[in-house]
Figure (cartoon, rainbow, N blue to C red):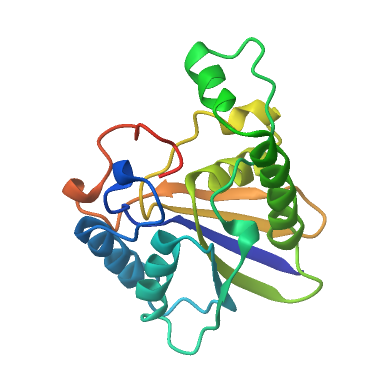
Length: 203
């Protein structure tokens, strides 16, 4: 029976996120990515996919070095974007304020790109067993976990993932998705794990 094992990893820690702009990885982020690479070394991936932000590009490059011969693809659909234009009614004030900061364009473009990612990755393949790695951002991982669990749409909020944490979802024909692993950081030493929520969920 055909199945897809979708490995999802958040990028490594961003360098100077408070400065704004598209900065790459910090030294800590590079260490996180290198340990993720060792964790995944030898996994028979069909492909590695990543978003266009520098922190995702640099994470993918470090991980791909441990996966010789595996093709690497950049995709806007797995970039850093708002996954759903969530109604803030009855949400905690912090979430409502957070959502209000997005522009109309972001509230339109983000869900469209997320739908593209779901259509591409959150499905069983036509045949065979496929493993793919997507190096992306907190929002998309949260949305795909919510989608796999068939949870209410607003439940992507509050799902926060460690930098270089690993989530695995299995999609098989004839049954619902299975969440195999969520935010697994066994490959990271304690000092490389997040100690709290970032001030901006998009980092």
